[in-house]
Image 1 (cartoon, helix red, strand yellow):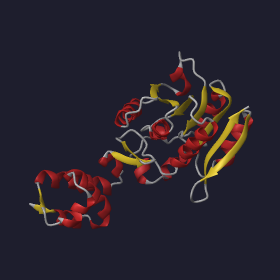
Image 2 (cartoon, helix red, strand yellow):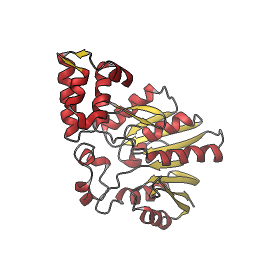
Image 3 (cartoon, rainbow, N blue to C red):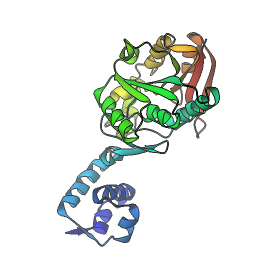
Image 4 (cartoon, rainbow, N blue to C red):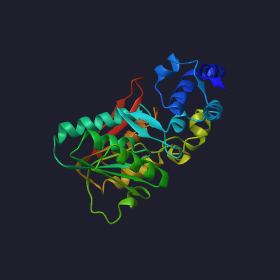
Length: 277
């Protein structure tokens, strides 16, 4: 038999990860781990802990092990095959929520999220803006499955997910949107090899690769979005830190007005938005 403290010491360079995994395996909170370190654990728990920690050392994201990630005050279910939600994405969500509250103030509106992943963006909007009808689309099966799990978890009825390649997912639906939002793949193909090992080796490449210059999806979505936006509708993107001007230029070229950039807490470009017409 082995104690909690003995397991923690085995991976002292990954102490926080070890505590979180032990909490998950033992179904306890962190205070239990600190208080009852002398408690023995079963061989099954020990073996699972060692297996998970060895994967952590290889770079496997702990969020996939814990099966969860906090975003916008909500605990999202996660699994392999969806991008791990980042705090930077909250900048886009917070702007959209504020925009809805100020511009529409309780009116029923339609909102589209392109490339839903875990549903972090679309479900956060649906949760905090109950008068918005939110639609989410993704080309992959796993994001649709995971987002629907989270939809049920949060008991949301004002959001629906569709599978398909960008706007083709909406074929047959007569919809116009007040807001279209997306955190599309935006890493240049040749730069993926330079990403952190946790990202490049374990997160879905399809959610990262934005083509030769990282701008493929911004060009396509911006051009096609004009058919689906109401007049003066908002198009808003998360972007890479060095893509502010490039994405702004795409929107301007396609005739969008009031094009602006939002910065993250580090002062780097993080969101670009504009209005149709």
